[in-house]
Image (cartoon, rainbow, N blue to C red):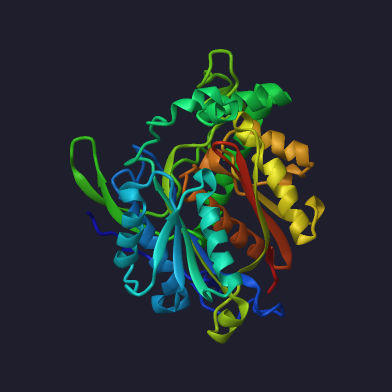
Length: 421
């Protein structure tokens, strides 16, 4: 197992352009039992099988972001009540990978850790699990993470499932390939190929602008790791930028791509999320605990919802989960400044945005998974990191939503508030 070096980030911008800690920033009035986000960082996202993280194991990726988050705020791991890691393609049944990363990060053996798998929302589910433990009084501080190496692990076949599966329509629909569920959404709800391709081009353009402007630098932990070339030559690289962004993407170029899942379909490699490697970590705490420790407050978790939808059109999940979460928060679509909606496929993202009447300019302002990539277990946590850094840049009180569809027919959403400077 290779060791990697973390070049840690910081929290707050200074006049020199670097980031530094401002201990009580954003610690504005609020309930002492609020669940607050103290800090969050992510790795860059690498192209699976051929990107900068193709030879980096998930425990190393995870360790990098875990240690960077705590180092940035100067927090001892012994103060964590629990660590939850979202991971879908789980090596060693999940627990082994997470515990190894735990020790590689220098965390105390007294701190527990576990993994959770709710498919594409695993990173967000990890955050909701930690938030629930804080709300219940079980813990005061916890770390929610997400990680996936789709280079070293692959999505397999359904395996040895019950023979009764074929007799139950909904159960049978759970194993429909994700690409076909995208085609189902496009056909059932009239999302044209052109709409999908336009959405995909826009995602690439927004991500390219954000990368070129250095907006992601605030949320990415640069990682020094190894890369093995085709001839077997091993070299050291520093990974600090997302691999998958294609600044030169054009509508004409996407229109020439063949359908990826059915001959007469509209879902292509260009208007689907990328298969990727990456990790993210988010530090959560009870507001009273964060303030007592002099920790900053990056955001407040206001509400969340996880819902079920028909598995054959699983991509509609955000269209159901977002209203459910907003209702719990006492908010509506017009109150939200930024929506981070996972772009599993352009078909389902377009449908959900149009169904909810969300202004397009509020959705994924720095691009989404079509451009950045979708490392399954990492994505939910990555979206939270990206969202809160974006809200913070706006310099005022603001609300944001993170949401995604989930394989087998579900949707998840969470509402966050940035309390202002």
